[in-house]
Amino acid sequence: MKKTPIHLLIWLSCLSLAHIAYADIYKSVDENGHITYSNVPSKGAAKLEIDPAPPANTQANKPKAQATPSNFPRVDSQTQKKRDDQRKKILIDELEAEKEALEEARKAYAEGESKPEVYRGANGKTYRNVVKFEEKMQQLQANVDAHEKNVQLLQKELDAFK
Image (cartoon, rainbow, N blue to C red; front, side, top):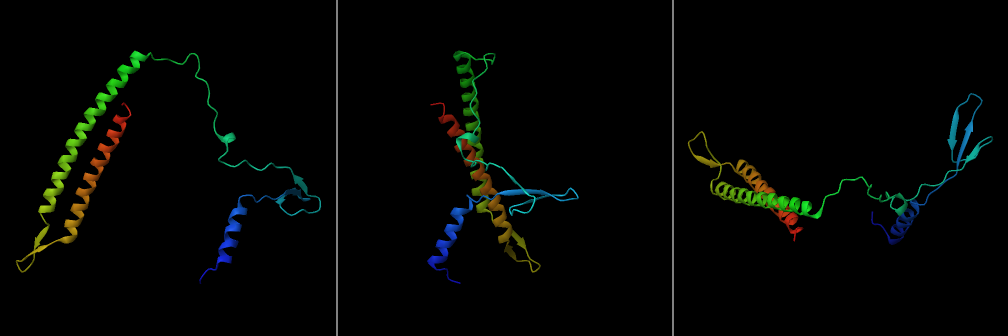
């Protein structure tokens, strides 16, 4: 079924009005004590005064920043600099180790690519096992990709020190 522009206009209108839907709520209690809530007024029902919830993305719903307590432990700038330098050294060491692991993964990929998976058939002929080869290559590529991503993330974290 081909939608005409009028269908699209109606659909968009419904979507734009959906977030402002609001109805009065009525509460009634019958002779047996059963409570019923409804949006339709009925005899003996009391209208409930309920404020609509504020939209989820307003400033009022965000937690307010609180001042740091006066007894909160503080670190002097020299101590913080030592911590930052130590962290930077650790990140550099991790980056070098990750780069080495990436090179090893690339070598393993190249080696795996040069060695196709084969099997010997009942007639003595050798055949390529394409499915097994593709699975092996996917695993090797995933390993390379993981190390590349780790190198990028470590480099990004180190760039924050500049």
